[in-house]
Length: 340
Ligand SMILES: [Ca+2]
Image (cartoon, rainbow, N blue to C red; front, side, top):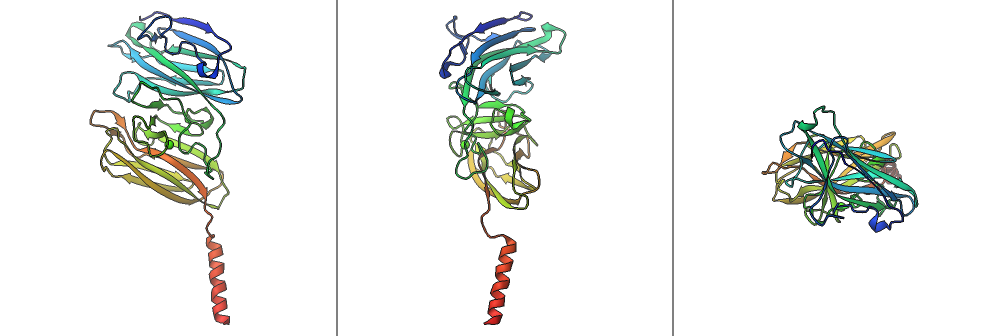
């Protein structure tokens, strides 16, 4: 298929929210086991009509490099009117050859026509020595704006809002670097490096249906920045552990909460674990980072990159007495004792 160009232009209107994309798995008109390979300058696109008011659109899709003995993989570029993601396939993270990726497409109002474009991109001049990517299983999910839960100052602290998991994949969804939290498939969170969005059906997840596994090694992970009252006391509660995916080794996490940095070590204690932590801190000026970065690069015995899982991140204000107030009460008690 090298050098071939695919250019499909499909226009569908009036779709329901459950079927935003037509022919998402490329099985129509063929009947089974088909995908699309994007050759040199290969491009497919489809226009769908946004549904719902002010909804977030999250895309899940699968990729595999096509061909063998090539010197480079062409990138895959996924774009919509407000976003562009580049998927390089430089690093393989699972045991299956196909890998699932999540991508934030944008946020639109009902009735807007959205053109989704997927194309190959390479800097290699020799098309024959390039592996041209294959794409399959495109699934588009809509999510309304997030609502605050249980006094948690963070939105999506339990990572329950993210791209849809594919029913036939056991390996979670890779989320690539997203320097802006408003362009992130993990809504509200910045992604540094690559993280794996894991589901409770195939991994050990401490709470709810989803969690994050930090898979791309030292200093990669997730971050959220929050504006807080400078000098006030807060605490971050979270759960860290092992996903039960063969990553049964000592794992390190570097946690930052405002100006406070903690390094935690998750001892290997069987295949799965969940440990709750609490980090108190005084808010600094400006945005306060809450981040979870891996302190080491880890692989399973099978050579699959893996790492610590993070879930149930809760940020709350401390409602205890302020130290200053405690001192005043102590002085008052001492004065009373002297007077009496
Ligand atoms: Ca969760």
